Image (cartoon, rainbow, N blue to C red):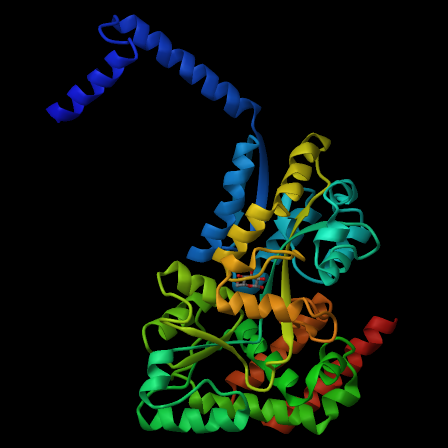
Length: 439
Ligand code: BGC
């Protein structure tokens, strides 16, 4: 203690403050407090509703919040924890209806266009023009954020949903490699089972079942069939034998999962994998960000591959921030935030922590791990390889998504529902949804 205080007084003396009377210190403190409180009083506060509650999600948002604070804008967190945002969207909708929309919200999916049509979202055209977003953004992203030719959201990053994360040590111990096809998967899973290791960590939570299932549909026969199911909701596609087969695969995979397959959050499932409870997991690459945040290194403690049969495709999920057209006084801060989202520093730092990839045409590839680099290189090839995630709201409207997911969840959790029952019900659902969209 003595040493510290001596050090302090030596330092103060150096700056000529040595031996000043107490009132000098008090006035100085008062002055500092006044400056600080004036700064705080002048700072603009933006309420930001989001569902990013995990370790990596928090850290990633901090990369943005710090930059925002430098502009004297405070990010007031309105956190509604809910994997894939189901709960957050319900809260957001009720706040919008009550006329209490936050200034900022994490808003993913096709709902962006609907809310822009209703005049709820701030037009970001001026920020986009001055930042040359048409030149700096990947073309698919630039078109996604302009549902009716006006920019209405600021894009943060792109997740790859058809990711397979594996434990390299476990696989190598049994001379196995990450499976590229479902035939290989069966061989790997059988060998692991003999060693008493479950192949897959998986939750029975509805959106996580849907996240797995959409990859199975994509693996069945590529993007065209996938679109017929999840974008066009074509009843004939739902009646097709390939859809039957994807349902069968979903049921068959249960036997390779760590038992019991409980309704766990995605971070709990990631923990199960990290603790050696299973050799692989199918997940969006946000789980990679989380493993990194827990101190596990990509390509060392875990590896990153793709769901068997989907390696040529990028099943994407785009994270965006929408600014609500609330009080006019908030506009400058909202526009500043939109501008910061696209700054190279935020793009690189945020996405590196989050597990996603930058939305930019020229990101810093050298700062990406192999998983992110593969994801960015594939996504930047364009429309031919890009497939919109159904589970993460990129493919269809909320009602269709929720109805189909509820049926898939029932099928996954209730063994009494046969593959043909589930298929029959989903064909019916598709017919109703189609009619509803047309009318
Ligand atoms: C979001 C991600 C989020 C994940 C888990 C996805 O729908 O796009 O940002 O990390 O859900 O909640």
